[in-house]
Length: 369
Image (cartoon, rainbow, N blue to C red; front, top):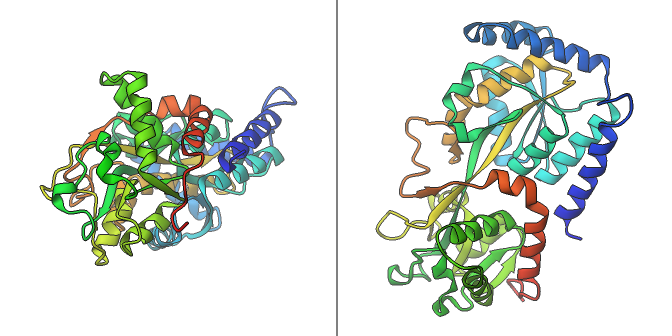
């Protein structure tokens, strides 16, 4: 069983544990306190909420506990920017999205929230929402977010955009890919790298092809040929290191911000063709932010949620990420052709797509072998 499969199996057990007994979730004094603060803020006119949250946050001790799957080079400056704005010290627990989910659910089961705020991948946010671990936010910051980025109990804070990436020293303009289908071409035999956990990319491309007229047999043949062209690697940052070093010529998919960062550091890599405009459908996967029920610092959690969707969006742009709102000067989506990301489908059937992707990659060689 893969790490993701076992994590979600555990999540299911924890969900059952949290929601059984006494007719519902564990109730504690901390839950009552946090609920009171959230209810008070939600009941105010929107133009008064932030000021009241600031007043209440001063009474909470000047600290915030953030659980996030942001990498350290993102989480640290984000925490520092919030601290600078409000004088509130941020304690960061950082792990992969599955670890963030597992820890948050375990603490909910114990009746003591360790996190005030969670910021992680859409799949884990959906699981936390379904579990009843998250509190509702209704601040005016939501007005800046596209409706596609608003979900039950959480909101998209940043986007990871899926596109191929290649080494421009090894892939010349005449050989650039112009569609996902191109990855199956014989000319890419031995030149392609796939990431072992990219089942969400696999699902989105598959459904896009089916929705645009391909038969299941045609889709299956394309994936067979793509895998036949490829080796596999674990981790998008590791993949980019291979690409930057010229150890691999092309990645079937990486997050555009990772490619752009590497290029800014002088690496011969890109996700855009020489024309500057990619026609390859770009799927923007949401990562989200949410307040935790029973938070020790609920007003501070509200304040961070509000900040991350407003001033924090500018910080994300400065760090080279794609914000969930429109930010002046943001160029992260320039040259891309966006396609809808299937949050609903993956939230329901992620396990099946994991299994299908694992089966597809079975027997593929690893980069370096």
